[in-house]
Image 1 (tube, one colour):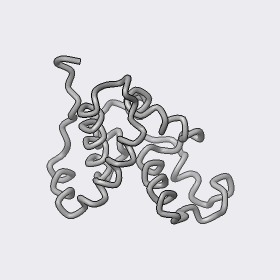
Image 2: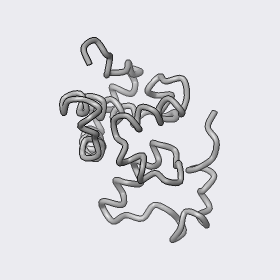
Image 3: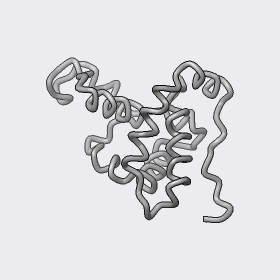
Amino acid sequence: MGGRQLIFPLHPLVQARRATRDDEVADLVALLTAHGDPAAGTPDEIARVALTVAVASLGDNHLWQDLQLGSRAELSALMRRWFPALVARNAGDMKWKKFLYRELCAQADILICKSPSCAVCTDRAVCFGPED
């Protein structure tokens, strides 16, 4: 684990948003760390990756873009390594940022889908559609 870089450089605008949305970041970090894989790294490493993903979630682009990764596939690989239990819960391959926020809403008993099922939701293409 030695020299492996776990914190991804984030756009300064994304970092600045954290000041006004720190409670949101804390909720995302808690969700991610609760599903962290101890085999992936130490608790500190899991927490650092969770914080990086949480802060990047404040960005305006797809999460993989705000993490400055090359593709959604790279983000999915990162999630599989550090948070495999969340990957298993994302059985429909929902876009990661939407999935994470949906998980937070589910914890708070807030339904975000307009329909009782994603299969018939009018926003399905937004949640599950292809990414550029």
